[in-house]
Picture (tube, rainbow, N blue to C red):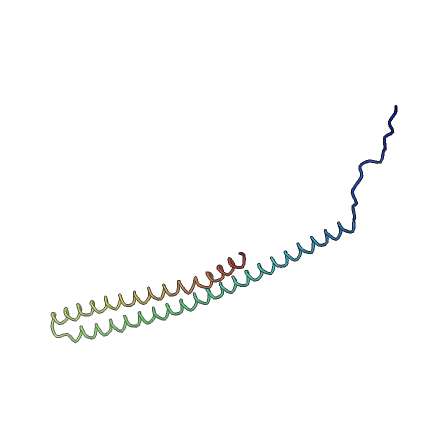
Length: 147
């Protein structure tokens, strides 16, 4: 009783190379489209970030110019007040008049210094908000696009 064995090997189900090629092509095109979309989103995000930083740099320039102008105005006002005080002290008729002029001058200078400090504080707070706004907006936009 001898059995006959076949040397054909395993049978493959109907393998169609054209179907596999089409599936591979479809997968490749889909991947390429996704890569293009991702690239476009990244490009837009980078452009938004660039614009945000440019806006921030413009804000820094404008604020520094404003601070510089206010500083020059403060120095000018201080110099004029000092010259006026010297003239008033020279014109004083007695030591008590000089002391009264000096104490009044010092009180006014302290009030002026406080006012200038408040102005600079307000200006720097405003600048901080304006400086961070473009970057914050760009970041929020990027997060929305990513979601």
